[in-house]
Image (cartoon, rainbow, N blue to C red; front, side, top):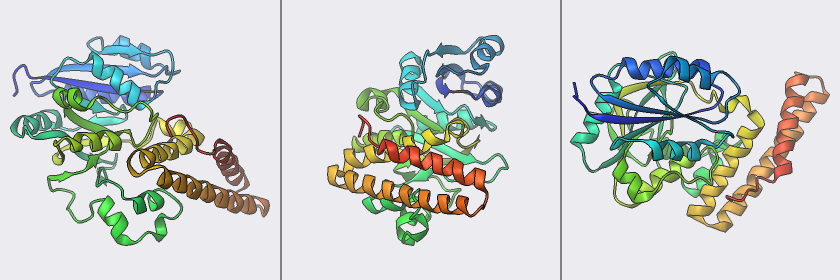
Length: 313
């Protein structure tokens, strides 16, 4: 038991009411002596999220927005309202298992040089979900999560995904998944919040890079477990997921590797989408799963029309 230790938890939610409800239940059911300051930032959900939180969780601070503010800005809004010295950023499509919250808090208290930790994330079936990374190299940016990934040298992906360390070993790494990140108010005061020029994706990578740059350690902490239903918000807008993911990658490339790398990467990504559009269109014309093929053609064509350009890039 941890007495009156105050832990702030920030959850940014968009149209996942049926997952947010059990997430909040898991938090309060597993408080384990912690005093919780839970903040839900709702990004103008069109489902029953706001009403559900108001009705079922009156102890939660609900910050309902009038537009979809995106993941980084939403978290920054929640952080500004948080009261605790330790702040946990948690996805709404998660569920805390056992005493994960108190274990993470205890680890942070025992290791004052650690600026952020993340638990072991589990898939809904209980299997391990990859959630720790090393910073991407230029080669990683061109291969990882593109149609070239299957051709990537093993060392490139192995280093990025930390394949050289067992899943059940506590280890200092470069960055952790934004699904569950515990940090300190003093860290945020030093480096600032998330970069709001990202709308979704790569914001936790960027944040962790800034945190490590000023000397804090970031640790993967598998003694704590959290279930994560991957991508339940982003899968509601598949086309925008493609666009947001790649625009975020380009912003990161420009910010940390320069304009030449970012421009070359943008051309490579667009060529990849063009190639896949032709492949899907050909399969659609010969009658192979036509509805799926034309849906993909529409998505890829939309991506190509944007040129993956944005103000943040």
